[in-house]
Amino acid sequence: MAATEGEIRQQLGSPASPTRKTPVFFKSTSTQGDVSEVLDSKSPRLQEKLIRLLRCAGFGGRLEAETIFKETPALLLMRGDLTDMPGKSYTDITAFEYVVRAKDVYFFRRVLNFLEPYEGKDKSKIIVDLLAQFNRSFSEDCLASISGFNEAYDFWCRRPRHERPEHFVQDLGEAQVHLEAHILQAYCHPTTSFNYNPDFIKNDLPESFTFKDLHRSCLRSLLSTSPGCKGDFVLGRTYEAAAVGNPGEDTCAVGQQIGMDCSRLANMDKELTAELLILKARLEDMAKNALELDASTPDDSTSPSP
Image (cartoon, rainbow, N blue to C red; front, top):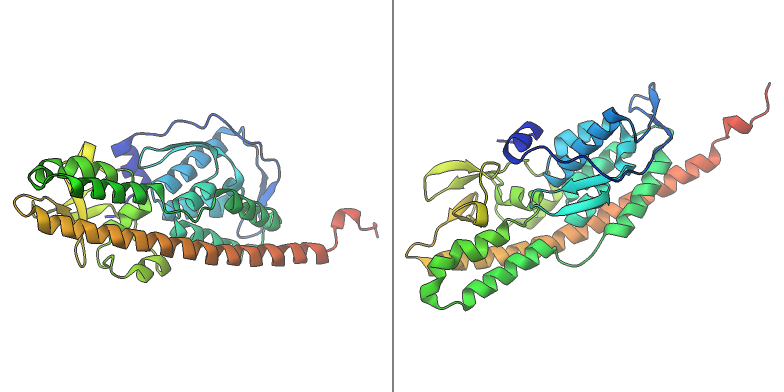
């Protein structure tokens, strides 16, 4: 079941309006090239769309985000406030900056796939600005959420063996709460295992937060519950589905599975970082081509009248 904006708002509440805004005053031509509008960041309608776009970035809603920025590309340059799915708050941030920080290559790829054939007059401005956003936001360091989960696992392993079942959810589940939306979607992937990291990175990622609860023999959604402090479980990857980990009497076996997940998540972070740099190279090529095209195109405003 895909995570929709309606589900997210119902389960997690509506986001607060951005408190800091950067004015944007320029024309944005639609993808069809026959409509343009002056964008004013004070417009209530535009602010509503910006809130939705930021919300989509923070909650893994790439399909809806694509619909929004295709309609109004300049929203990719506008800033607002965001509290993402893990509950981390950002001030005066763009959706694209968040995507780069979170290493959501799936969102990034959709932006590039849209901009490459885009013919709006603001194309070069948007591309150059996005490149600057990337340079401000990119880090080769492992995602803090993944490092935190690995540290929580190491802490749990250092506990006396008889204490591990009691602290399983407390230690590991609470750490999983802080994983970004697209990482949790990778956990919930219906067909592909963590064993195949390139498939996660190169292909699109289903926008699903539904996982198989093997302990209760049912499907559950992270939109209505979550690991750790808001739930009673820890997610673990099986070969083809995300499953709930409840140690019971088999703490050692479950712990080994979570340990393998830690290693796979660390590898996934490296793959995400490498893919970000590949996508950045695409963006740089687009910026170069757009600026060369601008330079070779006569400025109508300075052309002499016939």
